[in-house]
Image 1: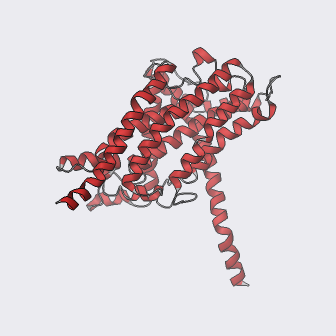
Image 2: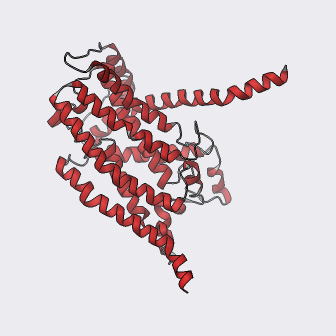
Length: 364
């Protein structure tokens, strides 16, 4: 009887663990969506030297709950003339991809819902559904502003997916794996071993390696992340001064709230991916020597990961309230005429730097 019970528990535990992680991810996304909105509103107020939310609760900390209750109390209406099925499905489609992608993000060495050998491919595969959801939401609304926004969403994401994938391929050539945890393990040894800094450190030592162009690839990745998440100065898909509320102009109540939550979920996902690929993930910035080794234990992993991720999230908020919105044609020109050629150049040069030692040994 005991053997049967142990077998059943062993069979049920992986699914129970996965379920607990998924519930935790949903709670994590919900809290981030609520309080990143508050952080953005307070940050915007500080940048613009004006009062921010300060009435609901102490210093405005209950404002997210007040906003959530307001959205939940509103009636969900389907405007006449819309495609009702697509109109209702679009908010679900826009929220599902970041939740699924966060399931393979390692917040710690063992703090991951499902560690996949092809985790990076999984993230980019499901991340592309977000574009389709925004397009369908705008198209189903049968609103001229929403339809224009849908066209902008497609053209913008197609333009910026290309340089983002090129720089990720460049990094994968160096890392040699699609496993996100393995990419992080390759950055062990202190902050100078992170992908964004390793090439500079090697150059100071008189060696030009394949990591030499990683700072350039990080800048391209960060720029594409802003465009992929429709953040200023690349928020032409929404552009309140032109298109009211973009693809979700006709949405109200929690329909609008889900689109809003998905935006911040995608920001968290993009910053998490940048943290993993370039900033060492859950690795400590200190070398594992003497008393500093205390800060690199397994309990510190999630702390370092979240600290790096939220620093990037803060920079995303900072950029939004610092730079003005660009024109749509300049937005596309930046990708097709500047970012794509540079990312192609970095891809080719990184490949050449990887093969150069082999050619040198073969010739001499």
